[in-house]
Length: 59
Image (tube, rainbow, N blue to C red):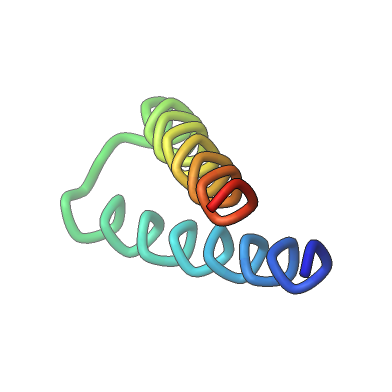
């Protein structure tokens, strides 16, 4: 169960990073602001995936 969720989480993070890169290119976000955008989205997605894992684990 844990290994499946870890693989799933890595896939989701990769997919979200790909979509974030497309967003940065489409909205023409300056290169110096892109790391902040990526960091924010990655932190929020990690919190979401962790809370989902805890919810599945304890229900």
